[in-house]
Length: 341
Image (cartoon, rainbow, N blue to C red; front, top):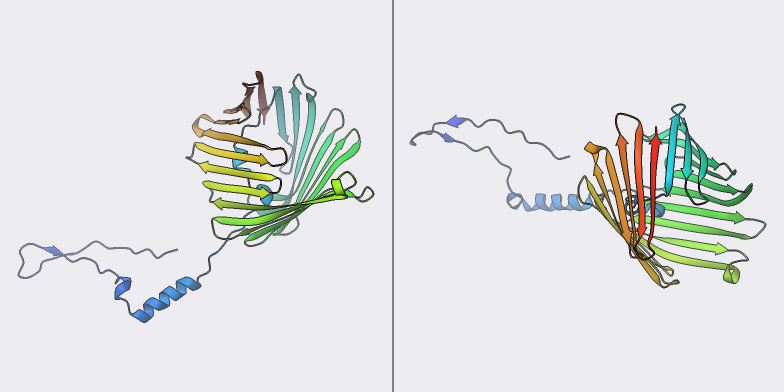
C-alpha cells in the first residue's frame, strides 16, 4: 500500500512590503526529472525487479462457469423441495416432481460437510447423494487432501447396476492448475476415458493451457482415440473471454457484469464433426431489494427460456416460475416450484 500524506491547515503569514496576507504553499516532493540520474536509474531498476504476483487461474473445468451460471435452467411441471438442516454438518432434502414425462416422482437427498476447513466458506469432506423411488442413486465425494490437492469421486447406479464412475484430482499451484480425470475405468473390459488438463497464468488477466482427452476400448474405432485442445481465458471478474479450440470444434464464451443488477453472457459452440453451430445469449437480473432473480436466454435453435426466482420474506420460502418455448416447433413448457428451507 502506498504512503498517505497528511496535510495540515495552512498558516497565514503577513509578508513585509505586500498589502494583505499571503499563504505559503506546502512543500512538495521534487519531480522525477529533478532527481539525480543515479537515483532515477536505481528506482527504475527496482521497479523492473519487483515480481508480478500471479494468482491461481482455477481449473479448466471452471473455464466457462461465469457464462453458464447465468443461463436459465428450466424445468417442467410442478416441483416442491424441502430442505432440512439436522445439524451444522448434515442436511437432508425431499423433492417431489409432478410432470407428464417419466422423470416425475420423489427423490431423497442428503449432504454431509466435514470439519476440515481451508477457508471461511469451505469445509471438507463433502458427501452428496440423492436417490429416487426406483433405487437410482447419484453419489459424490469431494475431499481436500491438502491445501493444494483436491479429489472428487462420482458414481451413478441404475437398476442396481453401476453405470458410471469418475475420479478427478485437481492440483492448484501458485499460478497454475493441473487436473487428471479417469472416467469409467474398466480393468476387465479394457475401456475407459483419461482426461489431462493444465492451465497456466501468463499475466494477471491472461491464462492459457491445454487439454488432452484419451479414450480406449473395444467400442472405439481403432480401439483408441486422442484429442488435443487449447484453452484460454482473458479478463477479470467483471469481463471474461474464454475459449476452447480443438479438432472437434470451437467453444467460445463471453461474460460481462454490466452493473450490480445486470449480467450478460454469450456462448458459441461449433462442432466440426456434426457441421453445426449453436449461439446462446443469456442474461441475469438481480433485484436484491425485491429478493428477486431472473435468468433468461435464447439461442439460434429458437429456444427461449426464462426462470424467475422470488424469496418470500420473512418466510423461509422461495417461489420459482419456469418457461421454455420453441417458436419453430410450436412447443411450450411451463413449470412452477416451491422451495422450503
